[in-house]
Length: 255
Ligand code: HEC
Image 1 (cartoon, rainbow, N blue to C red):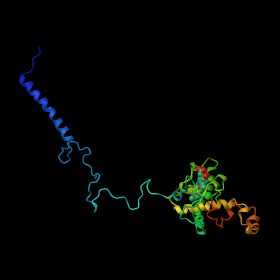
Image 2 (tube, helix red, strand yellow):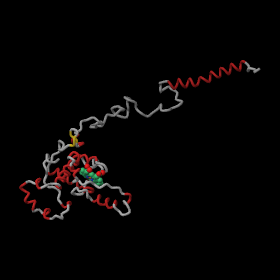
Image 3 (cartoon, rainbow, N blue to C red):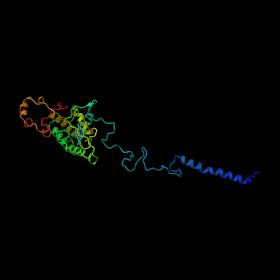
């Protein structure tokens, strides 16, 4: 027969077991107390965070606001009413064929476009836009090295801007390509201002017109003079030698 321990021992043991349950209960109660000042923090977890809660005052600023007002002039994404013609080159879901409001077609604008094109686009596309710029030539040479592309060069031929498919692009589409790039070509939004990208687009359209014009495009009164021009007489003149257009197409005439 198993002999039970003395009664007093059972009694003390029972009390001890009950007492053991007290600390967890106290901890649970304290943890649940929603008073950060008086709660006993046994585990700190993330109870203390150096932050300001919504609408809490912040003595750091003179106006006492912890939430700062947006910087004057800032526009939240999706808010505001940007001129999409100007910023994207799209009008009513189609590529624009005209300049956006605020930009005027004139000699100065065309010349600005030529200058910017010569700076930003000719390295690859060439001065006359045939895709024969110096960077392109160098890259093509590296690509065609006898032992395979040098230094792992991978290069996509810069498009001729006189390619029939490229000529199809309207003014707005060229603006968008200059801004965002296309396929392997990078965009120039970051380094060329929006006005200058429109000027470049205008110049590209003029360049296309100039390299694909027929006699019919020339005003009748100057056709005779053109027939005796040196370019006409010299069939070996290369495309690059053909001067960029000096005549300015009217704003409506630029497609
Ligand atoms: C670093 C070289 C480089 C520069 C600089 C460059 N392009 Fe290009 N561009 C390319 C290449 C490469 C393609 C062909 C991309 C492809 O087919 O993947 C191209 C294609 C194009 C096309 C034809 C798009 C089509 O529909 O096929 C247009 C238009 C164009 N570029 C305009 C411009 C304009 C405008 C600039 C100056 C703002 C410019 N590019 C600067 C390399 C360049």
